[in-house]
Length: 120
Picture 1 (cartoon, rainbow, N blue to C red):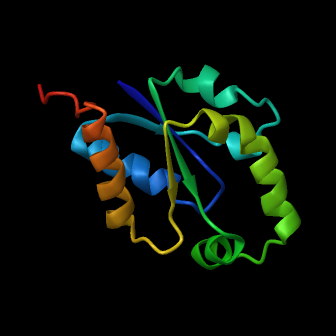
Picture 2 (cartoon, rainbow, N blue to C red):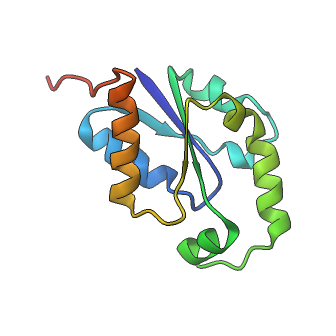
Picture 3 (cartoon, rainbow, N blue to C red):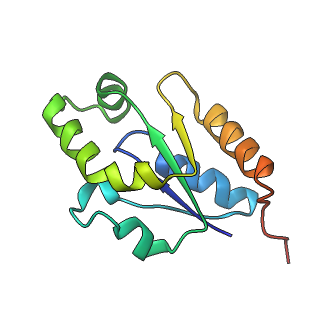
């Protein structure tokens, strides 16, 4: 099953992708926040499942070492509205470690009977 991971910069998409791939899932972080094409995340991955990771501006700034303004996050959120509305699972990552994010997503996937691909 193909898993798309969407959300604003700094929410943990790439880290989650790497952790899920390591576990055997077919997962891909989609940079939808940089595209005005609202359904790009669907066209790029054709996912069976969409995971939406979210984070607040202060968290994003701290994680990325930037000083973005709220208007920048607002624009990312506007571009992500379609993906967020169609996500199968939403997770606020502000107070979570990467391991906690992965654990919660894996628990959701298991509850949805989505398991890693068998090792060859």
